Length: 96
Image (cartoon, rainbow, N blue to C red):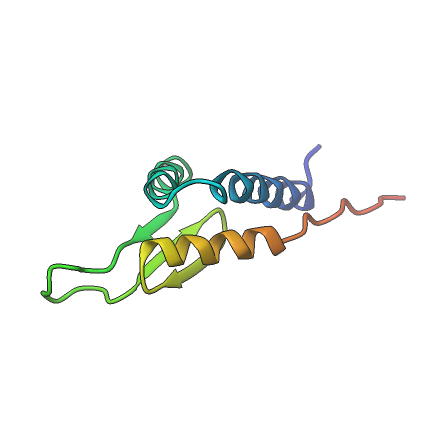
């Protein structure tokens, strides 16, 4: 039987694993991996408009239950990595 805390721990562990995998990558490879992960997990990546017309002014990243933003995609991803590495998996509750 699966309990919600098991799911939360699993997601936190997956976020930590992804953050550890993203950290050493170059900016272009990071963006590609994040885009792929957003597609696979139902995340959202909004990039700033660089054409000079109306559009978002900053990047936003919502992936695996964590949201972060930044002035660029690289900054938003770096902020997401920091947050994911700070998250600690929830320990399972003891049922007596």
